[in-house]
Length: 285
Ligand SMILES: Nc1nc2c(ncn2[C@@H]2O[C@H](COP(=O)(O)OP(=O)(O)OP(=O)(O)O)[C@@H](O)[C@H]2O)c(=O)[nH]1
Ligand SMILES: [Mg+2]
Image (spheres, rainbow, N blue to C red):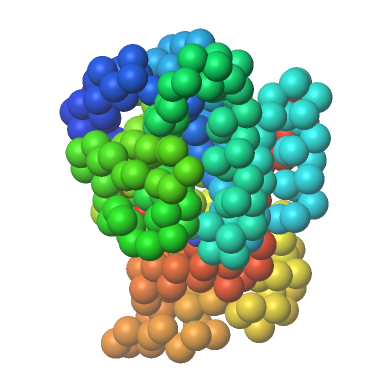
């Protein structure tokens, strides 16, 4: 698999931003992508956030395989970690977030109330690039208050957004680990769009994606692209097959594999192929 490089300068800046603002924060909401709950969890967050009350959110559930999401929820539950399944696309779970966040600091809220003080609960949203931090804030506010986009690196600086019910939300730019656990982690981050496509060889990435889909979601891929059996095919052969079916041909009758790969990732990320998850919990026990 190709080696992926990204831009750590920008990430280091974000880490400082999170650390500097942590003092005034009451609750951290850590957002994970339901398609990669393990690879999309930045292990550096534990060091950065330390003991701050933290609410875990599993976002983009509408794109993920329902059965595997159920396994992940059970896996977290077993470890005593509370995690909320959410979809910003459908709105599922969004209305629970404010209540859960307040619940985490209920003692302090009660004490303030006794003293006649009214505390504004300050919440910081953190997560890898493109996981939906800004979209979730907009959903919570009920209007477009912060910029979103279907690519990593949309949010640049910090941004405070005031919410009804005594809440203030801090949007932060996405942050990737300073180093990846292994190449498969980087690959899964690339599949879901957490790493810029521009720095990736998209064709090579499509090969490995198609081999994963062949082994786990063959029915869905065959149905989407009207393919016969792909069981014994390698990634590059499946990509050509899909390109041919779509009529993505360049001069001389050659298949335009780059265009096919871009189309494939567009369709993957908008769940046109189906609801697909890239990792199951038992692998990491
Ligand atoms: N299908 C689906 N798409 C979502 C969901 N949440 C966010 N998105 C989409 O994911 C893309 C990224 O959303 P953003 O809110 O910009 O992500 P971010 O985490 O703020 O990204 P950065 O600011 O780049 O770190 C956008 O195209 C959103 O519409 C969800 O639950 N389901
Ligand atoms: Mg953002």
